[in-house]
Length: 82
Image 1 (spheres, rainbow, N blue to C red):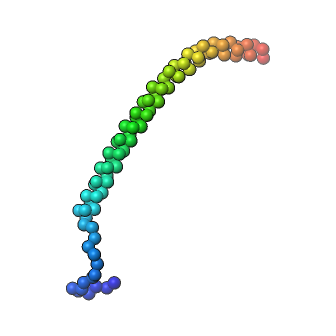
Image 2: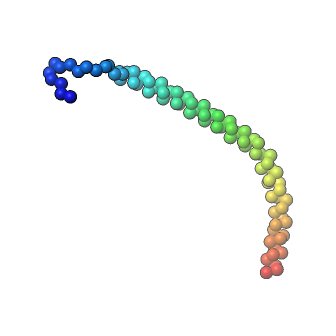
Image 3: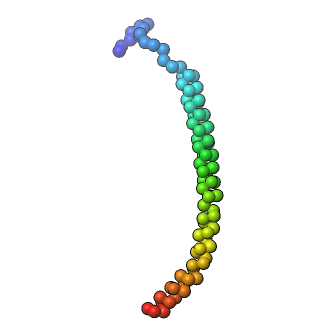
C-alpha cells in the first residue's frame, strides 16, 4: 500500500509497547514462580525416595558383606581347579 503525504490509513490501534512489556513481565514472573515450586516439589520427591531407599540400601550392604567372603572362597576354588 502506498500512502501519500498527509494520507490516512484505515486501521485499528494495536497493543502499546508498555502493555506488551507488562504482559511479558507478568508471564516471566509466573514462569519463575512455577519453576521454583516444581524444583521444591522435585526435591521433596527425591528426599522421600532416598528415605524410602535407605533401609533397602543398608540391607543390600549387609548382604554383600555376608556373601563377599563366600564368593571369594568360590573364586579361589575355581582358580585352583583350573
